[in-house]
Image (cartoon, rainbow, N blue to C red; front, side, top):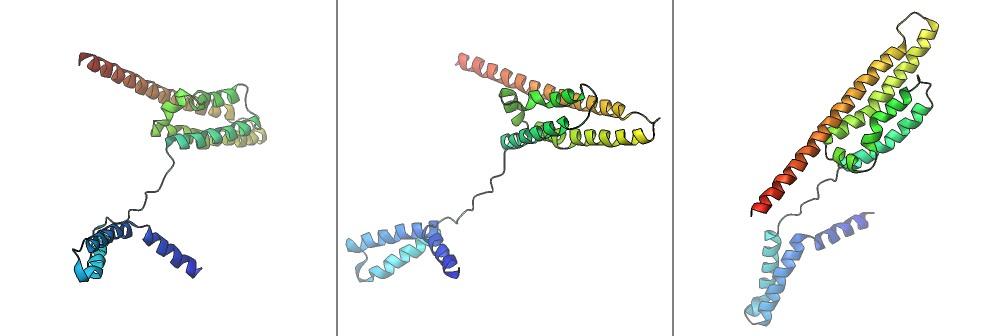
Length: 202
C-alpha cells in the first residue's frame, strides 16, 4: 500500500507542470552543452536550468468539482415524477384529482423544447422539484390521514375541501411559472429579432 502511494506520488510529479517545464529547460541546457556554450560546467548549467524551470512553472490547479447542472437536475426530477405517479395510482383519491395533480407537471416535464426552457431557469427547476418531491406527496398524505380521522369522528370539515384548495394553489403556482417561462421565450425572440435587424443594417 505504501509503495503504491509513493509510486503514485512519483508519477504525479513526473506528469506535473514543474517537472515538464524543468525538463524543457534542462533540455535547453543539454543543447547549450553540445554547442559548446556551457563548457566544462554543463552539469551545473543543466541542473540550474531544470531548477529554474521547475520554480517558474505555474502551480498545479486542481479541477473544480463538477456539480449537476439544471438539465441533470431536471432529469432527476422527471424520474421522481414517475415514482410520484406510481404513488398516486395506489392512493384512493376523489374523482379527477389524480389527473389534475399529474397534469400540473406533465407539460413541463415532458422531454422537448418546453423542458429545455425550464432547464434554463434554475428557480423554475427548483419550484417543480419542490412540487414533485414535497408539495404533492405531503398534500396527498395529509388527505389520506385526515380522511381516516373523519371516518372515526364525522362532522369535521371534509379533507377533500383542503385537498382541493391545495390543488388550486399548486395550479396557480404552476401557472405563474408557465407565464414566467413564456415571457423568457418572448424576450429571447425579441432579442433575436433585434440581432437580425442590427445585422441587416451593416
